[in-house]
Image (cartoon, one colour):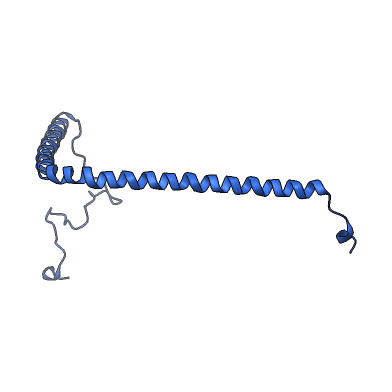
Length: 136
């Protein structure tokens, strides 16, 4: 082969070895930094387990009582706000029903000039209920 016969320059081999050394140093540095971070996290978890967890265990019942009281207070407040809103809307709609012109409208006349009827109503105003007892 013609390509295999080309001699390799000496500087290329030196550059490859230098690159390999730099990569090994970088890899070792990254492994060292990762080990330090893992150790720091382990120590932080150890501290939390030994110092914070017993403290939380002691104050948990009092905190839970206060949270339940806050929850009850929030529920009462929400009920009051909902009740006020419902009453306000009811009053507004009641006033609008008295003030609004044409509060009710008749159905338009049918094709033969007679008044149209809603489905299920007879001309005398009585409503037929669906079911077996009405001849259906």
